[in-house]
Image (tube, rainbow, N blue to C red; front, side, top):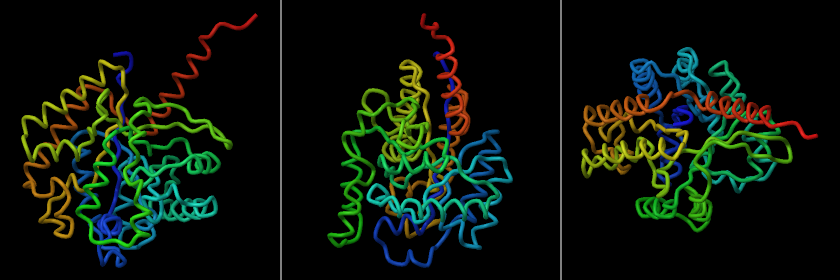
Length: 323
């Protein structure tokens, strides 16, 4: 393996954001489980002696009831990223003016809640467009983590529509690219630099299984364990081996529901893996992260992007001067 660097992040999607995307009633009151998830995640990460990147939703940061939990993330030394303000997975449909407002509101709320101004971004539902990247570069972001190179996005979207309540044509239109497109499977797995009209920005893809491009994030492995724990563990071991053989620097994604069960949040019982017992679910998550750290040197996505820039700089310096 040429480089063992890898990264770990957590999209801090709250209960209301899942309900909103799913089209469920009651999300407008912003029900929250952050007071439970954040302490559980921080305790888990402290046990593993691991710093990661938390992508925070601006709307949560703007609410006083969430401030203590969010501040504790920064106080624990973790990197803070921006996960948009409204958590709408159709960010690719936004105009430039709408994007600027979205970033301004989320940045201000997140900085006030955590004391940190985010320099990393991930679009909700992996929503991304050239305009989003251009606006990020213009606003001084170091990196984006919104690409999800997989061929099965249409299948995930079909399952989502199957389990969602009846939606209007307008609501379905907004969600027609949820989780990405089939063509996203052809995008690179390793980090790379994107050039925009407003500057360059590092892209840290959410890693999928090299070659077949199926998901390997923790939630997917937990879902597989509902059919067979042995198969789920074999799949994760195979994914790590494939990354090392293919010289892929993986970026693993966590979600709040990895730390919760359907008993904790009955409104979200429909999500895959929410029927698992808490001890079984957390035990598997513990094993996933332990195996990840054994195979790679795990850092934040900011550290991952910094390593990318250092390697590119070294490569440029190594090029012979032209006569």
